[in-house]
Length: 170
Image (tube, rainbow, N blue to C red; front, top):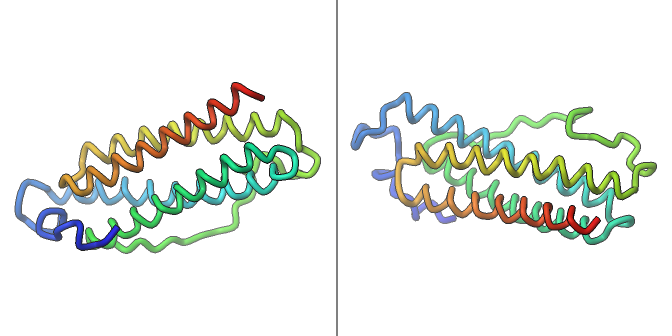
């Protein structure tokens, strides 16, 4: 996304033009930033589980790699959007232990059960992402931002569908 696609006059909630109260601006930026960090987490999860499953289940590994690539694009678009809106897209990362890492001994867990568990987990994550983007869309200040969010939402729905189709065949 080129930052010139979004006019600062039309999309900048800092301005007092139009009806975009500062409370709505703060909420919108908070939701946008939450979605931004969720995309980074999804990239990490998809690449990790794709790597773990690559020898056992190359089809699932490929699905996860394709989702990660789309999520990288989403991450970049959302970061650019945050910058355009005057926010700092900085991320403080930390090494995660537990939580999403469902398989501490992944080498011992290369089974259909693992692939199914990963798919179920990611389907839930993608469903939550669709819900999150739908909420963000309600507060989007202009059509350019709405188009970006609609595009990302469509990809998240596609990812969920890909994972659900995969589950039907394992």
